[in-house]
Length: 230
Image (tube, rainbow, N blue to C red; front, side):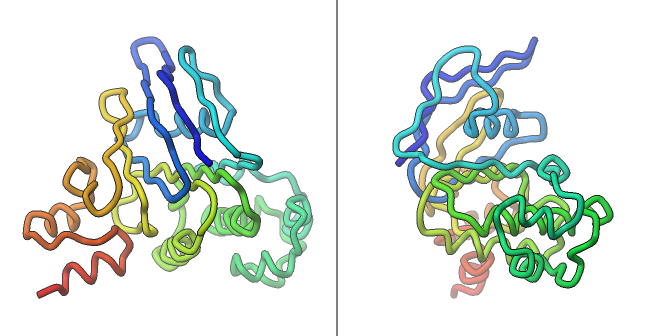
């Protein structure tokens, strides 16, 4: 199972993005500055945007979904119960998972941005997809919800998960790190070796590497283990 980008180019006036690489099964982290092209690449991998040049192919991908940065784009129901049912999910189970139990008749648009994000992510993560594309999944979430999301993603055993984010504090266990720099997608490799080439690494990761305390991965538990290592 994989997603293959072959000489993929998108041009927008003076801005362009070039991507070439293979995303195999596992959890991938794609970093880059704001405006570097993370959302553009996410849309292409989800099949919602076609490149101007090159191809995007896949092997054995039978189901896929993209989680948009702004959860409003996902909403179709008039109330929370109807929204859950539109995903073919049990409202009681999903609303409990999202911390919204007892609010079945509430309009989704009456929720705060954080509550709406929790609802949409709960619906998405309640189902299995061969390809799960997450564009800024941590935005609008507090630290508790970021930690919970990381725990859920770290337990995902099958399929391909691609996380596009500029988050600097919360990560699940990652299999491979990618970065977009000056309009080009770069494969930094698997963990832990990727931390040596990760230019957008959080300050704590750079500090640990500088001290020779190489974290096994980038989850909170891995970073704490490296910090406490004698």
